[in-house]
Image 1 (cartoon, rainbow, N blue to C red):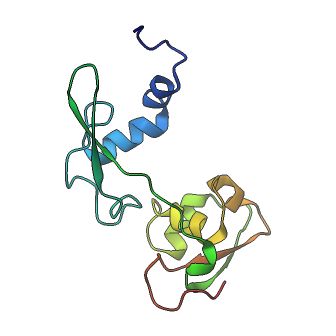
Image 2: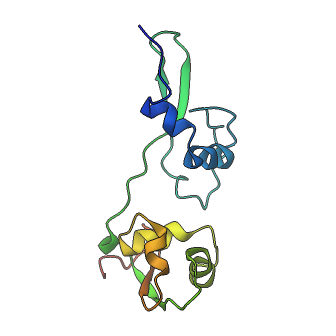
Image 3: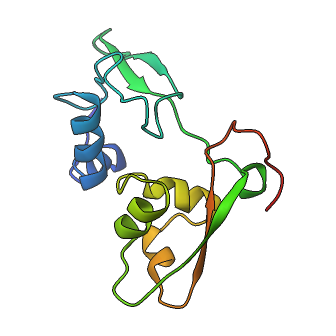
Length: 140
């Protein structure tokens, strides 16, 4: 069996900025090795848990985070609406609305967008919702 190439999707993903951020957030030093319990309670990955995959060639156990499924926006309880002004960035919106500039993902979930920059368009009104599991959902 041949080894992975530089264009192998798994290697490209492992070298990505997203992977670097995930490794920093989970306390890992390498691909797929999150430190158990290192994900902060306010992280969007806090409830996804981990799983173990065994490398068929080496038998090494690789611990990694499970996939996070984005909740449908209509299942989230609306907490309010925030107009976007000139110069607003998604971190500023998150800081102002949910009290944490790193919680921009809550705004993405509430508005059904995957690219946070979509939220920072001047003139847009951004829906602010409570995280999944809070009472009062299904009101979008």
